[in-house]
Structures are given as C-alpha cells and as structure tokens.
Image 1 (tube, rainbow, N blue to C red):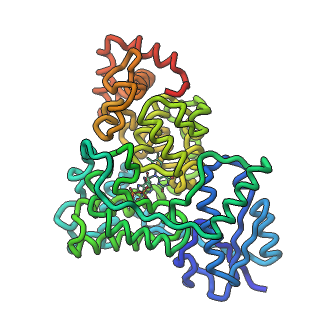
Image 2 (cartoon, rainbow, N blue to C red):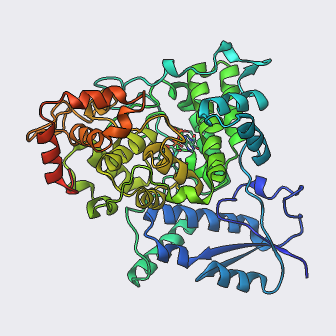
Image 3 (cartoon, rainbow, N blue to C red):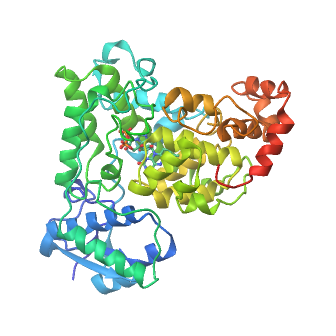
Length: 481
Ligand code: FAD
C-alpha cells in the first residue's frame, strides 16, 4: 500500500493539493484529523473553534471520497485510525510569497544589521514585481504611509462604506454548533466568547466572495483610516481576510494581485492599494519568516522581566466589568466576534498588558486562543515582539506603550468615557495615561538609554505628581479599570 497524505486544518485551499515537487499525487488518498485534545488542553474562543471545525468539515465535504475525515481524541489516535501502518506524507508549509531560502539569503545579506520590515518589504516588492514600474516603485515612492494613518472622521460614527461580506451558515455549521454544545455540556471542554452567527469564510467560495467584495467596496478607503478606531464601526475599511489567509483558503499572491489590478484599472488610489499590499506582502510575510528565523527560544523571551498573571476579567473577556470605554468596547468586540483590527490589538489590548507588566507568554497564549486568525507563527512575533517588546527590540525600535492622548486622537472612544485622557491622577485619571507613566517609571533605566524613548524618560523626571500616579496605579492593581 502507498502513502496517505495528511492535510492540515490550515491547508484548505486548492493550492495545497496542486501536484508538483512537494504536492501530493492526484491519486494519493488524503486524511484530515479533528483532534478533541486540542480543545481540551486550551480554552479557545468559541467562534474560533466553530470557524476552524466548520472550515475543515466543509473542505472534507468538497473532497468527498478522496479524503478520510477522522474525529479522534488525539492526532496520534486519528492517524492510527486513518492510516494504520501506511506511511504518511505532509506538505512543507506553503501559502506565502517568499520562500525560506529567499528570506535566508536576504537576512544573511544584511550582515548582522537589524531585519527591518521596511527593507524586507521593498525587496519583496521588487523581487515579485508588485506595484512596480520597471525597477522603480509605482509613482516613485515605496511608502505612502504619510497619506494614511489619519484620525477617524469626526462625528461620523461609521465610515461611509458598504457593509463587509458575511457568509451564510449552513447544515455543517449547525452540526458544528451542536457538537460544541455537547462537548461544553459534558464539561469536557470550556470555551470563552460568543459563537454565532459565523462571521468569517469557511470555504474557498466564501473567501473569494469576501475578497471580491473588499476590493470592489472598501479597498479604495483602506489607506487613510487604517489606524483609526470607531466605537460603532469596528471593521471600518479593513479586509477581514486574515482568517481566510491563515486557513489557506486564499493565497496571498491572489490578494495582492487583485488589489494591484484595481489600482491599474483606476478603481482605487495608490495610497490605499500600497497600504494593503504592504500588510500582506510586507507584514504578513515578514512575521512568518521571523517566526522561523528566531527559532524555538523566542517563545520564552522576556527582556522586560514581566511576570504578572492575566486577571480573570481579562481572560474571561468580561467587557461589562470594565469602565474604560476603549477597553470595554474592544473586549466586547473580541468577545462577540473573535476579531478586532490591528490598532485595538496593539494600542488598546497589547498596550494595557505591557503597561501592567503581564507575562508576555501568557498574553501570547491568550491572543492565540481568542482571535479567529491566531496561530502560533503569527502570534509569537506580533505579541511577544511587536506588542510586548519581550525580545528587547529585535522587531521594533521602541516599546509600543502610549497614554490616552494617542487613543483620543485616533478614535472616538474618549468622549463618552468616565476617564479623561489628560488626567493622570484623581477619579477621572485615564488608566492608559497613568499606566504609561508607571511603565516609563518601571523601565526608566532602559528607556533613557534608547534615543527613541529618552525624551519620554526625561519627561517623567519632571512630573511633580509622579508618586501620586504610581500610588494610584498600585492601588488599582489588576482590577478592571
Ligand atoms: P487588514 O488590515 O485588512 O490587513 C490585510 C492583511 O494583512 C490581513 O488580513 C493579514 O493577513 C495581513 N497582516 C497585516 N498585518 C499583519 C501582521 N502584523 N501579521 C500578520 N499578518 C498581517 N494577524 C493574524 O493574521 N493573526 C494573528 O493572530 C494576529 N495577531 C496579532 C496580534 C497583535 C498584538 C497585533 C498587533 C497584530 C496581530 N495580527 C495578527 C495582525 C493584524 O492585526 C491582523 O492580521 C488584522 O487585524 C486582521 O484583520 P484584517 O484581515 O481586516 O486585516
């Protein structure tokens, strides 16, 4: 008997089955394994468990007789059931633009200089001919960020763009929900967050619909408000494509090619298209390669020596326990959908944890479990490196810690809030502003020696009410702000 090919739950698109150097032969039988142990070990967001199982079961239904779909206690047990004594093949990871050797050559060519995203991105644009005119970037500029990153339109409430594509649930979703209910009732598995209706694509067809709708309806306005946040409009012009890319339902090449085609057809301006291409061909690829490049010990990196545990209200996504309007809004979005865009992740959630010195590995685990698009490779660099500075600056030149003023500028969260972004002390002291100074105080020595943060560290020395700020923060402890 020949080999069987094990198809993983993040390899659900057609490009994982193209016969080729490493793809399975057309006649090779496939196995897919649903392991209950994965859910028993960790407390996932229910919407995420639902999405992953629904996507796997939908793919199995499409593949029909070619696949043996096994529901088992563990992967080992599943493999034994599905393959018996037969050899099992797996695919080297696919679904990225840049190959491992290509990245290794670039990293080596840096001769020990920092591996900056911007440099990697420019190289990838040129090497893969994305938004290029000959060997020059389209319009002569690599980076149009200064046309982007605008605060949200004031008094608008929501961006004036059509609502995003949302899939319709079917019988497979119903069956998944029934199974999850059953597991929960038996006490075998516990989840966090709410499940349903399913917001994200589970099939290739749904994912293509989502991509098409994004390119036609929201790509044009993607750039300017990329970093802005609105209470009533959590999605704004974001693509909502991360879970589809990470499940393997979409290939990054087709996403950036469609965006570029929209620009060439005059349907979307360059600043928006460049911003989107940068997210996928720049950030996503960079994060993936750093994960492999940094290796296993990156997981335990903790340069700031942060060890505080996550409080229960946070782990339980208990948005109602939180008074600070930004944090309660974002926690509620997460609780209800398993998704928020990158600035709430970085500047509302990550920033809060960083200020309070929470354990970066525990926080990474929390992000992984609670976000529909969370996987080990994408969470480690994003949370440990980018958001918690736990790697001491291998990814970013300074910690992403900031006070309430940033949130006030980039969102409409502050006006209805019980706290004021410019109050450090007293009943209305903004927990982000006070938390920022307490963070600067805790790491003063390090920050004063970094040219990018020295000014903030010096600013702290001039605060007359610093003791009061620190005292109040100590008193708050890990209570919900
Ligand atoms: P858009 O804003 O529309 O961006 C387009 C695409 O670019 C995304 O779909 C995504 O595939 C890609 N992308 C952009 N930035 C990144 C990045 N830093 N890393 C990887 N891909 C990126 N993204 C994940 O896919 N999974 C995660 O678990 C994840 N965790 C994050 C944790 C933190 C603390 C931070 C700061 C960012 C994280 N990101 C993660 C990146 C980013 O926030 C999400 O990809 C994005 O918000 C998903 O929404 P979207 O598809 O609408 O993205």
